[in-house]
Image 1 (tube, protein in one colour):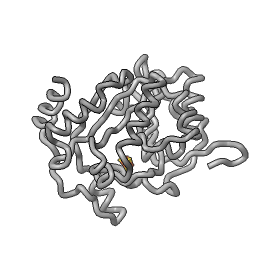
Image 2 (cartoon, rainbow, N blue to C red):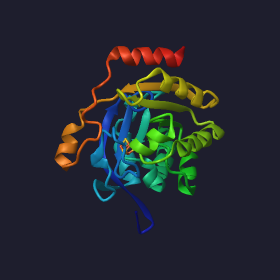
Image 3 (cartoon, protein in one colour):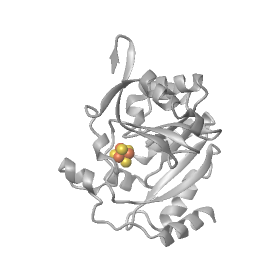
Length: 240
Ligand code: SF4
């Protein structure tokens, strides 16, 4: 969205001192709008691009700067969502301003949109948290709404640009909580030097109330959450 040459962004919410969306302590901005419809989504309230509130990039950076003293060397700002690539020009503006102020920039994305705006955004991105949600096209098409190949194309762009990358996968019982999936993930990511961390995260259902409020079914709402033991075992297969 642009008004009088000012890039405006639609934002769902902010988190002041986040510790799970990137290294160190981070100011996390949850962008409004998503091009996908993941069956495991925790944030269905971010999907509609016409929701949320409107901010300028300067307003977002001013908010983040209030917490700068907590960021230390590792921390900074993370733009998450929703899907931040839906509003790539706005995210690029936020990141450019952050870099002028010495704030580390991190993009939390599904990697499912590639265009000139996204390429420009990557120029000012210090780290990417990339979801590889599944390891085959069938699950991507059935449970996400895009193909795995576009995510791998996005990963190649990160590798070409040497952008430090964390791969994340949510482990969902009966869908991808098996050794075969983890071995496939290992195989998929083995040739990308940009990847310095891989996280397997447990599927959670705290979002059920959000689906209820929106009057929408939670597609994976009947699936259980994985045990700690399963996550530990799959992580050891991944690292083995
Ligand atoms: S990409 Fe993220 S926000 Fe969008 S539907 Fe999937 S999990 Fe939800």
